[in-house]
Amino acid sequence: MFDATFEMVEQYAETFRDGVRDAFGSSMIADVLDPIRKEIGMLHSFNEEFQRRSSSIEQVFQEARSLQLDEGAQG
Image 1 (cartoon, rainbow, N blue to C red):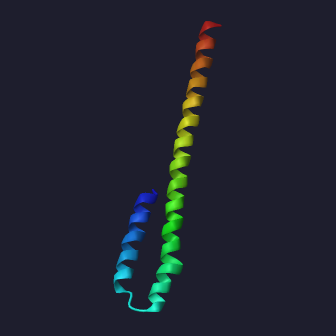
Image 2 (spheres, rainbow, N blue to C red):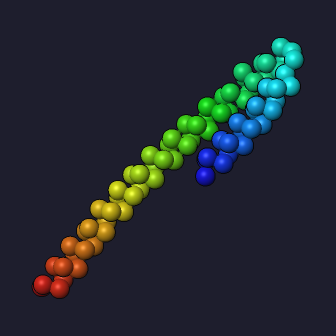
Image 3 (cartoon, rainbow, N blue to C red):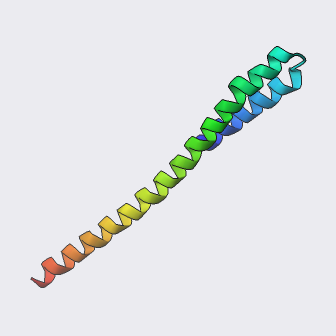
């Protein structure tokens, strides 16, 4: 999800950087584009961690359901 967004921002930032010829353009990079890139990177990391934890939780739930079914079949 964030990979495509990050790649797009990187592409636009690189295109913009290539055309920068003054202090205003440089400040746009430093004050706007770089913080956006950083924020997307952090969101990407957060999303990856969320997916890992969600997967772990789902695995625990499946194990609990399996135990419940086993106990129900035995009882």
